[in-house]
Image (cartoon, rainbow, N blue to C red; front, side, top):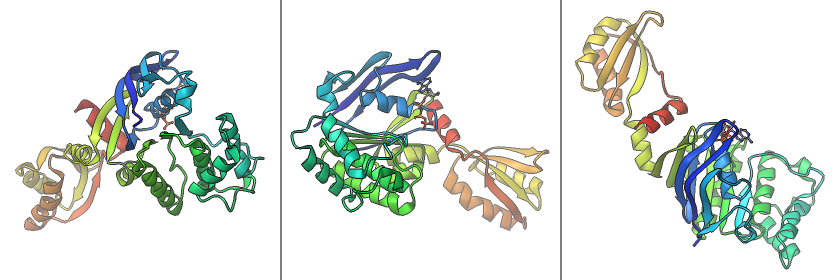
Length: 305
Ligand SMILES: Nc1ncnc2c1ncn2[C@@H]1O[C@H](COP(=O)(O)OP(=O)(O)OP(=O)(O)O)[C@@H](O)[C@H]1O
């Protein structure tokens, strides 16, 4: 059983604190690392894969420090976010290079096994430069898997993939998780994480914001106050009706937008009540749009929760 333990880890680059006092245990199965762009996900993954030492705190694999520890490197596979691959190598050579670097006793056989796992055997003779985005991702995955690591780390693996490629990679990762590997992938897209990981870790502005079962965190997100911008045939009458209803926490008439700004506490009740209240009063709803639905706002809600 491979457990990566991040303990009070921080990492700074000059004045920039990329990761700030984070403690997380990554256990076997699939973990989603969720956070907006620039949150520190890549920096965390680089510390877990031994590319970077923490500036403070520790990052260990089964109790052993990962940084500069070749024993730990042999048990970890990394699929980096960057697109850089040696374009002139063919798929097989690309994977084999890592097999050789890892000093495997039979690099040829390991290469074929890894190519087969990601279903790239048929295309293995073609130069990587001719591959589609999905194929590149798969060959990077084969390279990360060639030494049969217990820990697999993937940085934004679904970026730029089409739905079919995405499904294919999800199936592969599920299988890796079921085999008992410790799989962690990062993403800034909630739906992506939802489909694959039951356990998620949320990181915002370098800090650990939430941890646990996806559904629990999802609930936290849907129970937060939601803001809506509403235009109707009679904003004043609608405002009076809404403020009398417990689904609404705050409300103001915005003269610039010429709309009602409504803060709803209970999303489901609000979605039911709004059309009913309008219909009872003969008010026509012209626009109902969420005004704070960006992922950043969800994240900042979680951080302050
Ligand atoms: N080598 C570096 N030198 C200076 N600053 C860095 C370096 N690496 C990362 N940072 C900064 O640290 C912060 C976290 O970056 P990081 O790449 O870890 O975030 P991320 O969550 O992976 O974001 P993205 O999804 O955009 O890659 C950012 O402010 C970034 O600019």
